Picture 1 (cartoon, rainbow, N blue to C red):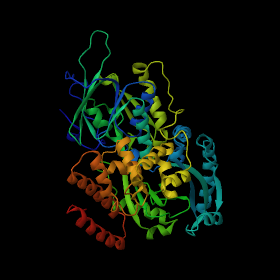
Picture 2 (picture 1 turned 135 degrees about the vertical axis):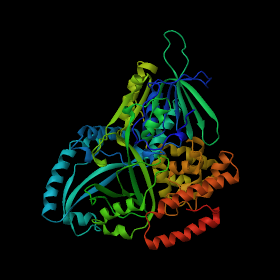
Picture 3 (picture 1 turned 90 degrees about the vertical axis):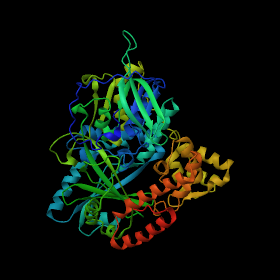
Picture 4 (picture 1 turned 180 degrees about the horizontal axis):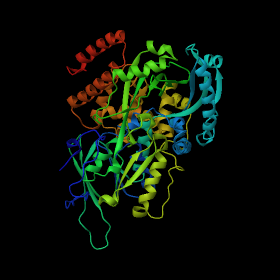
Length: 582
């Protein structure tokens, strides 16, 4: 039986012709039970569909071979933005993104924050012409701003820009100010999964689908069903379900997943695009700042809490989809571009990098940043698999619309007579945005810790407060950089499906601060180990793997002096947790 491990990790290669014409085999083995739909993929598209269909009353199972938001959804720029750069070539993408941004603000108000941006223009005659063009372009974008509660742009002189952002280069002759919305993409995935689970869906993370096959005929006139078999990669447990509908929502893994059922349709082909980001240990600017790279692309740096995020690249990716990492060359490319307008970034300290792969619609010829950001649904009826669908492309900003379109397509099969309500019903925690200072007093926690709890959990912060009331010891700070309380770590382990240290980090940002997990990974691993009955050696191994990954993410972005300091940290890591070091 073919498994994901036996397929090449790159989904760039053209599909091979199916030897049996694309018709799925038949599986006559037993299953755990019947469901309406099996969704494969726990990114934003998969969890969005799971929520939509579960709210319609459908019986759903979702399989994710890693963790929720492991891929592009958890490694994006973290913005529910309107797609200003898509306006000239694909206004439909811009309109959809702006409209869905407005809906996401409505259903998860605690999880979004406004980011003011400065689009810089350099001095000189060409710069003066460019400022006129940029001003005109943003006047067109202003028409879409009300859809996402955005503010109209403002044209700024060089003096205006310097007053707002004193660290800008003297070569900046002006620009425009506008705003977008930031979001924690991983939390957005988790909240969609939680809501789906709360309405009856079953979510299985770290569970790899091994086969998709037709179920034996149930009789004349009975609808075709599929059997999906999977294996838990942490415990080895086997799972299987029979479903009327199978949804392939695995992003860049889409062609690989389709091939599990013998489907090699060229319609599933994607053009994976790698994007990296660099995280700095402090705020480098008051505003987000946009500059131009050496080859004419736009990149940015913006403040996130007490850090800064620099991004992003857009390059064709041919490598292992399960092991995507930034390189020093990619980091230098970004730093070179931003340093032209914000010179101080060259002296700043990077504390990490992250990378993801966009599942962009396939097209041969255009540069990577010119590819369409539209999405498509592939109905595999022509491949001999009616009821099997693949979701291709899309953006974080318009995930809800994409999920609604897929759900509306399959609802007549599994939830007839229902309608979409995902734009009306708040995500877990989003019904009310509570007062963070009130929680700070109740929890005897710092205002910063309370504010970030509310950001991640909204009104569900009440559940964490109740834990601490029952056991005040859980108010202890586990991660001082974020900061994160022990009660929150226990909460995400017990109620949000966190099974590893990496899972906890994805849900809380634990270990992503300046210490890189050196002060919190082992403590977190101990809590994970106790909850999941792991041996001390297994818990220690989880902490070690997390710290090694964090160290590797840092070293590609360090200056020579910083690299020497990092060597000391790695020596400490080696002495504390064993010989395995980067």
